Length: 309
Image (tube, rainbow, N blue to C red; front, side, top):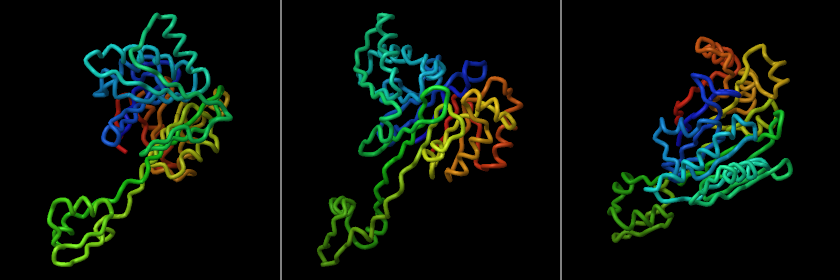
């Protein structure tokens, strides 16, 4: 499981940073990629990665500002052009209006897709658990931006314990069907009468990962709730230390406020993105240094960077 950042800039693309989009790559877990936001030029960034568009099975939109959705019609259309691969359906989750935006764009441009899109729209009254599968649960909560905007909490369900094969061999269990029975929690009796209790050879379940991905927002308690005990918190950092007033006026956060959210939530790692173009390369290290005075395990991400979870 890892996150690859396709666009880490705020508002408009720059030479160094494209606008918002990131891919949560769940290839080992469920052989899928989940996309969060899809700003202009997202499909171009994907061409510089190993991501196969057909593997993108779900797209989660945080809000309807253009720097988070203008790349969506192009990506959906290009996804249809890979004729040598099986056509697979797609789910799009987002605020009310995302369906109208996508369908209008496709209709006006005369675009026809050979796969189906299933839309899951929500408003302030229909948030909470928005998706549950056998391996993941996703929650959404409203943030504090200039328009309706949400953050997402992706929770991997606890992983099964692992079988201690070496311990089983030492106990005289022959490799084969008995291993499978024990792995499934079934006690067995060997030919010599030895009873093998499955619980003695299977480790305890491992807690799943928690990934919190926030849209644009002022510092708010909702951000903290979404990020409680998160393994990774992706938080916007449009502004820097001392910019609290302008950040609030424009519905955004500073690096220091993002660090405060991570600290209050007990998150393990903080990844800062949505960086204003006014910050030059030499300024990025200062953004990190300042935030680290509040939350030590912080990193300012860049386009195309991959972060293992």
